[in-house]
Length: 111
Length: 115
Image 1 (tube, rainbow over the protein chains, first blue to last red):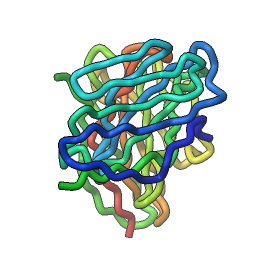
Image 2: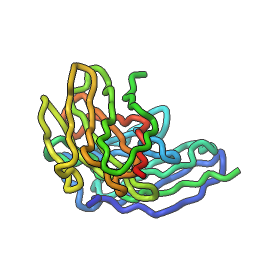
Image 3: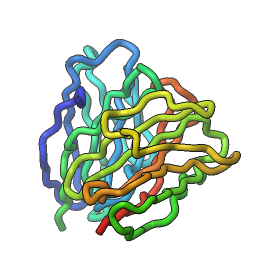
Image 4: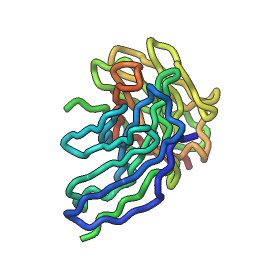
């Protein structure tokens, strides 16, 4: 089962920041938090990942709380093309380090 | 940017037929995965593969499924005798190393329809 909890859906106005929350209260000390998104039925697209520190790349920022029990993905200036299902995933440390997908958050960016 | 490529993008097959889905992982990657997504449902892990062996498989990955790396570039998923419930999008993925901090990249998927 997925180790994360996300709201099923969110709306965001185009051009505004989208802040997607995720709870992962049972995360272990050396497990990373990953964010992927899926547009329609395309392959999951990697966005960003982090362990303890906040991370930023060209797509998004990841804010991880000090106790690591929750995180927030920030899309700084959402566009209509950011409409997708966003998955927060704690990466399994066991054999092969597979990703276990939950239901994710369906983000709708509206004009 | 390197990417995982999958063929075919869409295949329709008769129930009971064998199907092979093909994947070319990113060239320097060593760990390979197959996932599937039934329409309207979540992405499910099937199998992971490293050093020509299955590392882990899920309950879905029963005896009708097999994986193979027939040469240095391809990674295949074979379904021996397809069932209607095998209709799904199948995603191949790869990563460079095993560790939790190493990113897994996905292909665009092969849509399998069993009729």
